[in-house]
Amino acid sequence: MYRPILSDPPAIPLIVRTKILTVDDSKTVRIIVKRAFRTFDCEIFEAANGTEGLASAAANAPDLILVDVTMPIMDGIEMVTQLKSEANLREIPIIMLTAEGGKDAVQKAAGLGVNHYIVKPFAEAALIEEIRKIVALDPVPQPV
Image (cartoon, rainbow, N blue to C red; front, side, top):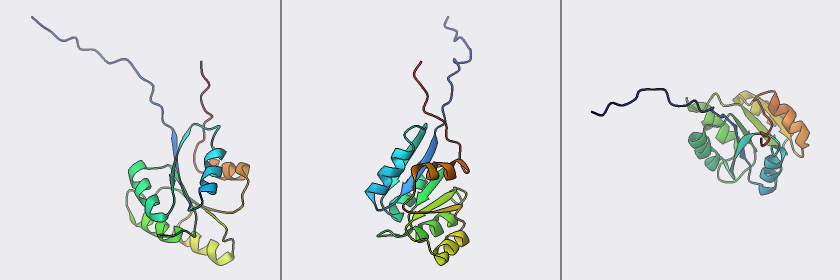
């Protein structure tokens, strides 16, 4: 007679990587952001406009979103407004990366619930420093 053996499956460590979505119409900026995270164990998602960014946020549930203000199709302000209206997305921290450093732009972003505002051009180290205030960044695991 066949009798199944009931036992717990072997424990497999759960690896949870920080997920970051960068939304910018400039491929160069997206490359710079991706390069800034090369030594950290995180997953980077990219989108070229707010519409793509919303879709990626819904599909990938990032831990943090970096978003430009001025983009075609849907700008960053509209994207953030829509993110904040979605129950499953509204709590995702947002950092705006933009060339618009005027007081009005910063106040508008803050009014939308943006966590931080970084003016382009920015240093990779400064970007990482601000992101570490919001999410954990673990180093890439070294091979054993």
